[in-house]
Image 1 (tube, rainbow, N blue to C red):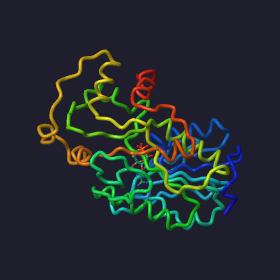
Image 2: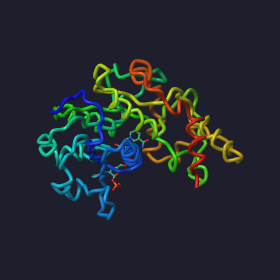
Image 3: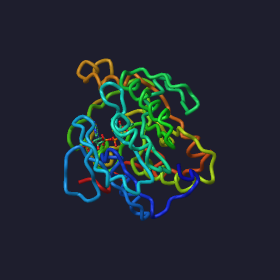
Length: 293
Ligand SMILES: NC(=O)c1ccc[n+]([C@@H]2O[C@H](COP(=O)([O-])OP(=O)(O)OC[C@H]3O[C@@H](n4cnc5c(N)ncnc54)[C@H](OP(=O)(O)O)[C@@H]3O)[C@@H](O)[C@H]2O)c1
C-alpha cells in the first residue's frame, strides 16, 4: 500500500466504477486537476475515457485498464443479493494493485428512520428497507476488503440534468404533503468537490472512514417543488396528502416516505472544514436552472 497521506498528483489515475450521474461528474472534476480518470459503462462504446464493466454479464475490464491505477471510486449500487458488484468480481485484482485510496458511494438510507431527528456517522445504522440492508452489507464487504477505503453516505442526489426542474418540465412530479416529513439532499457538484477536498487535504486531518455528504438544510419535499415551480414561472398544482397519494405510488416511491431523518454534515463541514458550494436547495436549483435544456 502506498503512503495514505500523500496528496493528489497529476500522475494519479482514477478508475471510476459506474460512470453514471455522480461517477461521471466526479471524473470530469478530477480530470480538471490533471489526473487521469476512466469511467465504466455496462455497454461497450468508443469513448477513450471509458471502459466496460458489467458484473451481470461478467464483462471484466482488460488488464491494461488497471495499469498505473492509484485510486478507485465505486458508484455502483449493490446487486439483488446485497453483494457489491465490483468486489464480487474484482476483489483479488484490486488487492494486487498498489492503491492509495478507494472511495465507495453509499447512502444515508443505512441510518433508517429517525423520526425527523438529526443523524450523524456516530449513530449505529438501523436500515429499515431491504435495499438499505443490502447497502450496509456492501459497506461491510468494502471495509472487510482491507483496501484503503473511505465511505461516503449520500442522501438524495440532484444536479443539472437530474433535478426537480426536469421532473416538473417532464410532468413527472406529484405534489405530496406529509406532516413533519423532511428529506436531506446533496448537489452532485458537492459530492465531487467534497471528495476532492478530502483527498487534497488528507495529510492534514485525522482519517475518517465514513463521512456523510449532505447539504445544510434538510426540508420538506413540497418546499423544494414550490421553489422549482417558482423558478420556472409555473403555477404549482394543488398538493395531495400522503395518505391519499400513497395508493398510486410505486412501492419504491412509497418507501422513501417511510423514513424521516435529517442528515448531519458536521463532520465534513465543521470538523474537516469543507465549504459547500450549494448549502441548500435554493442555491442548488438556481444552478440547475442555468443548465436546464
Ligand atoms: N440517486 C440518488 O439519489 C442516490 C442517493 C444516495 C446514494 N446513491 C448511490 O450512490 C451511487 C451513485 O449514484 P448515482 O445516482 O450517481 O448512480 P447512477 O447514475 O444510477 O449510476 C449507476 C452506475 O452504476 C452502473 N451499474 C449498475 N449496475 C451495474 C452492474 N451490475 N455492473 C456494472 N455497472 C453497473 C451503471 O452503469 P451504466 O452507466 O451502464 O448504466 C451506472 O454507471 C449509487 O450506488 C447509488 O445507489 C444514489
